[in-house]
Image (cartoon, rainbow, N blue to C red; front, side, top):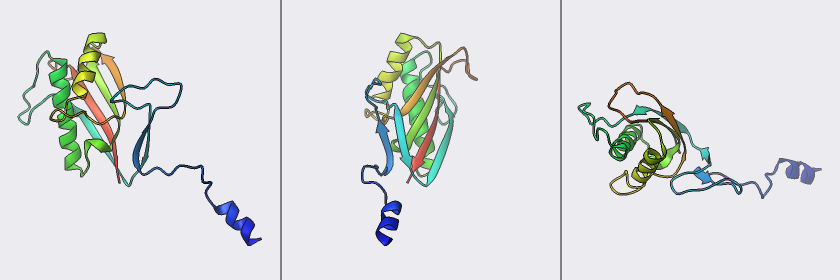
Length: 152
């Protein structure tokens, strides 16, 4: 009887334990550098970062008219916000990129900027959405990024 109870309460060996944040790219779905289709998280703290645009600390717009420059600065601002919360870009599990005038060229410039946004290093791969919009609160802004991070 005890052996049956123990077996009923045990975890199957095939079940995978998630430690921290783990990206998955299931077979049958496309994969690309800097992006994961699925993120699994097991942490004790969730951080929600408000929409970040390409402002410097004085609220001056950086990279007017330049998707790559604005993406880089917005991601750097996300990293600064995460640091203030005791987290890091590696803890980001999901982001939404709101992009003014989204088209194929803008998407290419944005993804290229993501590959070098952190002092020449890529912003860590995670699940994200690119959403084309007509306008942002500041008419000079081309991109706004919100992020969700999970920290151990």
